[in-house]
Length: 573
Ligand code: ISL
Ligand code: CA
Image (cartoon, rainbow, N blue to C red):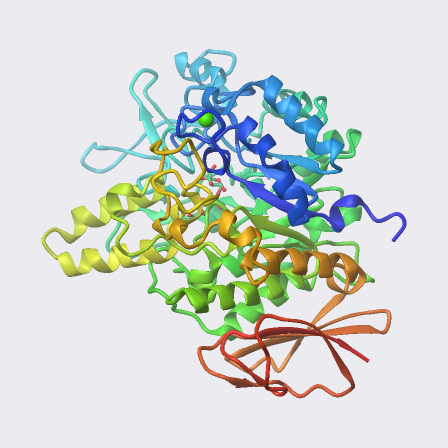
């Protein structure tokens, strides 16, 4: 439709630079590697890229700890390589989004080095410093009981200046102080304008709802017994000055007509989400809500759960929540996704990865579900070939993510000799760890390189051993592959974009715990989507009217009976 911004119909492919493609056989993915795969991405049918942090960084948190916004992590390449990538993507009509990480920097950033150098340094208040508290025994205590996202307190003691600084994530990721206008201006200029001037089309904005903290830093109520530190996310997200900060940032973005996708954890409040993404509010174009990816995760801590511990109706309710943002009457917009670099593989979570045949079938069914959701669609690298989680035989020593490792270490200390308890902890990581998404892209069947790096070269993280059976090379010429099914689905999404991208989403037969069915509707046009989330056959829900089958992921011999993990899309007349 005329006047619709490009990003509404975009299909965005998320790239994790370390693990996408290594062009020079040092075992680490790089920008030239991405350039070498633009053909592949174009043929797949994506028309925008989101590149995870490629900036200079000590890599404590895989680049989400930035030490210089205007340089690249040397193994990834140079600023000139980025300019080449932007240019080459644009020639193909592909947009480029970068990851904007501005809630915190690395502790190696020049700003933090200055800030920590003395209490009267002009940049002292660019970060959040607080004096110690002392308990009744005169012991030094941090200002409050908040637990960081990567275990331990959010407060780190600095012996040099005798104060604590705040880090909601790792110790090496000190939080910037957004209360200071000079700091905000520096962020906009150094992290945003620099890259906007180079032609990037927008940003995925990391932890966008954490900039405005409650200035009194209250203790969190105790919900996690047995530990002093408490999850406090609900206290530091969506704080009092968020609207103001985002309006200010939006003014910078709109000078360049750039799109914004804010990462928005811990926000189950629809009114708050609507305000973030309503066009007239001039805050963000869309946000990543966590409702879908949080399904099956623990409430007080994401890993305090059991594998496959959720009901299909929970997944439906989560999908409905963000789908409700898209309708012809509203000026808000949604982002649809089931995977990213922080989540395990969707087939292993919501499909069935226990046999290759079921993994393929459920992977195609999830492609149907994803590609029929309204809003802007995001696909994570490897999702298009049906990647599954690392196998059970993949040892904890080969997991690389600091979140997994720290969580496991804490558990190991707690469990002592209780090997059974520790095995339970590991089973949750085998199901949910961020590592499952981060092992290198499976281009070919050969190990250890998987076509990701030079033949026989050891990659920075071990490949998923399933690369021998799940890889691009085998799928690209196989008409029945998951890859070719995704291509078909993306084509279908483009051909029926009014319905599939912009249509109104309505659940059908909500209480059904086996079949996920919904109707998409726009201006009298209607589509019906059914997905059987079940190892057994299920009945096709009855919907009145004539149905024309557009696509199915199985032979589909039986009309009103769905095979295990079967998905179908119908046009309704
Ligand atoms: O992934 C999560 C839990 O394991 C989330 O809580 C995640 O930490 C949160 O969504 C913020 O994520 C983003 O910022 C982090 C970084 O580690 C993640 O990779 C990034 O997506 C800190 O910058
Ligand atoms: Ca390399």
